[in-house]
Image (tube, helix red, strand yellow):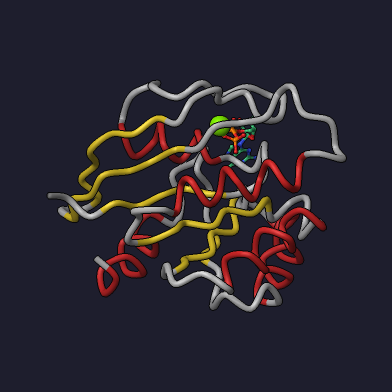
Length: 163
Ligand code: GDP
Ligand code: MG
């Protein structure tokens, strides 16, 4: 059985864009609106020869802001259950939000190894957000651009010892 890698993070950080890039097909729905991925999606991926099963997590298009944190925790829990590694994605352009902090707190109390991905890191607008991501207490973030395919070899390097 392939090791399982789950992508977690609040809506609109770029989880499905990463999923699509690694799958090499437009399998997960990407949209400008937060949280348009309705279902958990998964597929087998080979990243520079590293083989694993990748899980993209659902969004909450129907949720209001007050119920989102609890729902995010449930979603993150479901994604991380049975996963060997969690890719915790943040939006380096937006910086760290209270919801990111909430997910980080939950992940710190969990056994699953976490790789922090600072997405949307193409260009200087993301520099501050990448630095902020260090403060999540989950290790060194990988500056990444799911849209432009930047950081794939760093992701490979981070996953190699964990899978
Ligand atoms: P999800 O809700 O976390 O699955 O996020 P999506 O993958 O649906 O992406 C949300 C938005 O962020 C879309 O408009 C994407 O085009 C955009 N996006 C994703 N990755 C990047 C990136 O690396 N750079 C930039 N600038 N935008 C991105
Ligand atoms: Mg999505």
